[in-house]
Length: 496
Image (cartoon, rainbow, N blue to C red; front, side):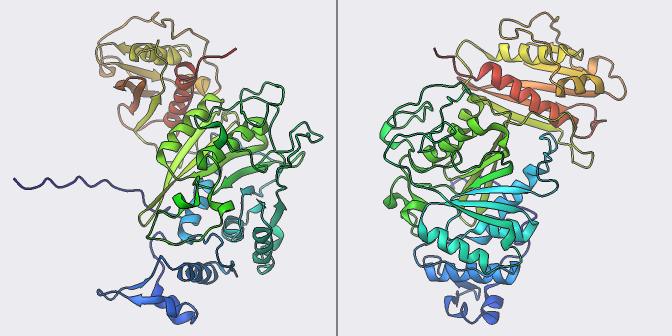
């Protein structure tokens, strides 16, 4: 019997707004236009021009000519500094552009129409501020700790006078050994005097943290400030972004033999790796709350993405978004969260409505089952006056809601019902949605609950009877439902 062919999984593609989404860099053309790049280009047996990705000088020269040829940016970094790939970094910029246009998160008016971002650890390459300013006209504050990074970031800004006024670089002061506090009550190391529920507490010794990272105490990040201590009083930002130190050791960082992107220990490594560093961003975000519309970071390991996403729901984020960045054989993930209240404004009519939506409820507390979640879904919609029909045999709830009912949900005007205790005040029926009259100009959809593994449920929503009469409304409501279920069933037990 022949071997079964492995099922091919469709991988995410480059962002459609990315300059390289349809036309990848033409090495032959670049070599003909830029003599300094020509020595690094060779031709494979199939006649295609290539470079050696394990050659730092080749990857650095490619980044230089791409930034100059496609973006009009003059750029360079010294030997050993982290060399970014332009298409991958552009993906991150365009994803943030998508987040900022997401209507359910309200726009702030502090900067008018100007978008202002904060790049955590901008590096000598200063790639995100340079791309964001040149592509979209955004302004940036970039931070870093080493003298070399600060010097070359400033050089790269100065060498591009057409965008230099949009970018500011700030030096991160290293954490002093003393435990003195700054004037605003933050410790000198950027430790917040707030626990993750926003409750003021006594400063804790440097060997412990209120944030449970599930890692060894010696591997919890206690380095220089990340956001707290760097954001000035009264400042507001639309977003922050970060290419964190992904690894715990330089040996781990060098395990990929197929690429050579350089990178210093400060850029690549921190105790606890990316999980500890991003956890510090989360901790700072809880203290800073709505100082930023969106907090974002790149993540290198999918397991960490799941852990960090769970933590974000625990600390009260109102919305969490993820994406996948793919370049060649390298995968990175984007993680974004906000503490902004969800806007009452509905998604713009031009946004394409998806007919099927789903989310995973992970970490469901032991005392709750799929039945409890099903009744909670029923109560969530019934409390606004929407018509609900629950089918306990198929684990589905069919909902018909008017525009007023939907707006009540988006305005958080859902009555406080103890769904977990029961929420069974509605009569159960085995009738499907097709068995009762659906009023015109109403939103009709089915929500189904599936048991995956113990502690994990899949919740699916599907529009019934064709397209929604209210474009964008279904996805907005489904996001509200997700947040409500996570708050009720996935939050850890309160501790005293």
